[in-house]
Length: 314
Length: 134
Ligand code: B12
Ligand SMILES: Nc1nc2c(ncn2[C@@H]2O[C@H](COP(=O)(O)OP(=O)(O)OP(=O)(O)O)[C@@H](O)[C@H]2O)c(=O)[nH]1
Ligand SMILES: [Mg+2]
Image: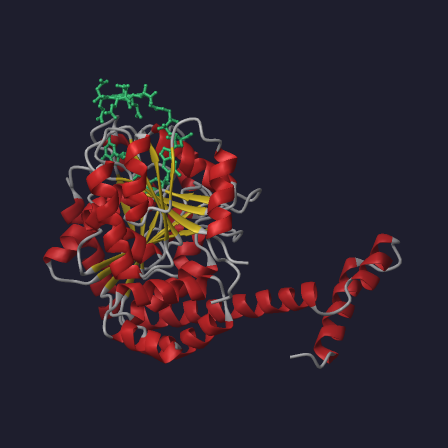
């Protein structure tokens, strides 16, 4: 049955791709098995991260950008993440509302996902979905994060180029400068240039960016757009291609990707350890000794790690 | 148990989107993942979205009388391209006498104004198979 599904996937069936994403999203054994098979086929797609505050126009910009990419015949995949409610586990995934035009394009695949409890702007599942769409043959992948305004630093661990979208009128310059968000952007977009004083935001961003950026040798451009009209979006695509060329010519892309892969592995190690601690071995006994103040947290942690490493369970 | 994924869609030129949004939020609050398409979708767009999102349920909303033609078209395309497992339901202003034809066409249930949200959610949960692990 998996073979059949994979055959259809390689023949370009969107339904097969969608079902595979569901399997990896639900982290089933079959999903892991498929990822094992698909990962070696990946690495071709160039990944663009789209981040920025809620409602800044990330989805609208993605819609316009994908249309331009399609004019150049690139195959494009979009993974758009919206927050999952921590209380009910449900999620309202609304990014597609801005991308209705793309639904029927045979060269575009769009998937909406909930964060499902992961902190940061992208879920585990979103990363795995990108792996699937990479193997599906997409030339460009766009990952839209949740618009929390902070802790989207996550996109930097999946994307080759990070686009930071902002809008006039957010008011505080501090907002933009804090939380590491300035450091992760490779391209800055001031959207909704039809409203408020976009030029002032552009000047502020340029001044701040002159103080230094993530890659030596790349000065992040600041671009004004009106995303729903497509104004300025061509510049954004040009900037993506320029940043890609820069990374490739400076010999930085491979290193960047390896650093990310390492990060991906290490985070999974962390998660697996935590999962095992939470499921398998007895944490209760150790914890109750901490509650009684017989053990300090360092010693307790050491004990737990010890007993986990000694336990034979797979 | 996996999460139920639902597509809530507005087909045709009907701009009444309050009901669809109420339903989408109710499904979210019931723990489902709800993809909302926005208004003015063609049946073809709705089905393309349903495929890429791999949803268990397609929910259609119509208040201005185009359901007779549009709902069966969506149902036909869903069955053809996704198989019979996807549950299709509708709601909005749908005259009683139109319901048998819609059911015939594969719309499993139709919920009009005044139906309690709980009844709708219970129906979805009872009719989607979330047991299997795949
Ligand atoms: C509010 C309203 C408007 C608002 C819409 C605002 C908006 N953004 O939605 C405005 C003023 C813009 C409007 C405009 C028009 N309207 Co108007 N409008 C209404 C009104 C009074 C209430 C609709 C509503 O929001 N109800 C509240 C929501 C929560 O209820 P609901 O949509 O029925 O949804 C519930 C159920 O039906 C069900 N449900 C709905 N969808 C779904 C989907 C799924 C999957 C499921 C499971 C359940 C489900 O669950 C919901 C919650 O219980 C109705 C009359 C009425 N009593 O229904 C007329 C009505 C729908 N409008 C009507 C008309 C004719 C129009 C106009 C063409 C012109 C006019 N005469 O005003 C325009 C056209 C607009 C357009 N572009 O399509 C007619 C339609 C007649 C018909 N069917 O033949 C109605 C029935 C009034 C009438 N009796 O004449 N309208
Ligand atoms: N005035 C103006 N409005 C815009 C522009 N681009 C997008 N919008 C509107 O801004 C609102 C939010 O746009 P989205 O694209 O959904 O924003 P987003 O950043 O994806 O939002 P989230 O995913 O919810 O964080 C929508 O109503 C858009 O129509 C623009 O250039 N100018
Ligand atoms: Mg969005």
